[in-house]
Image (tube, rainbow, N blue to C red; front, side, top):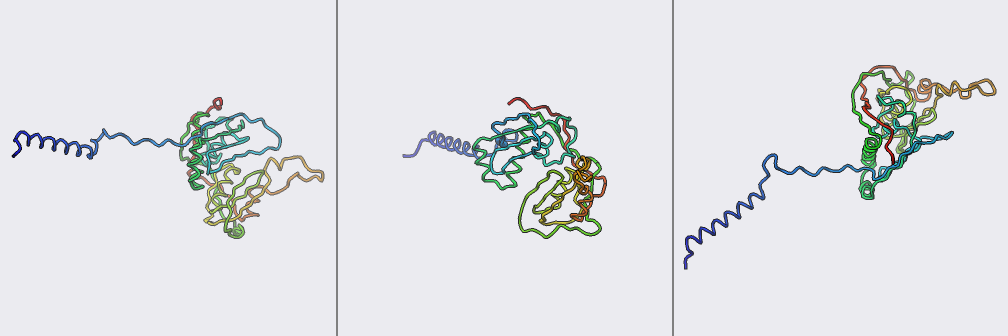
Length: 281
């Protein structure tokens, strides 16, 4: 028995409708109608306690931060030093901060959700450090209301160059990674030591220090000098200064065969637009 013509037409219409629906499901949405991708939420600290530090004699400024977990702790630290750490920006290149940002010290303890801890365990050391820096940047924006922007300015700098007698950096090292700067002393041992050493010099020389030595490689660099403040301390019993060691410039040439030459150059700076004392815990 042959199908009725009207029945055939109905079957064809149903088939065409099904095809159209399938094609529509596979076709891309017209421009402007496609749903935007979900924005990834940047990891942040779940809780953070910030308190003004009560100064004690002979204390240190300390930051504890592992690249493999979501915790951060700082003791006796200024906001400028915190910005320095979070943005990898020497103090000399942080511009426009109020006086209290350098003089008022804080104790900070911040912790993340366990899921962030778990995620950071899978990161490399460098990636974990970068993520933790972003988390501290978010903390500064949230609790200190920090707003800032980058600029490039022509500023006085020092060029770090090899002195006339040649560099005396010691033998190349196979391993070791550390950076310490305290009490008129710098110690650096990194995969490319001299650029890191120049960055540490920027913290104590009063200007940005640009590595112009052309020296690469891992060295165990140690520098010890007498600061202007210590040179002005009362004399010892024998009449000599309490610490009569060399100045920074002299020590640099005598101990490492390097020198600082005054210059001017383009310097990337972080300009503080707004900052406040921290909000309550």
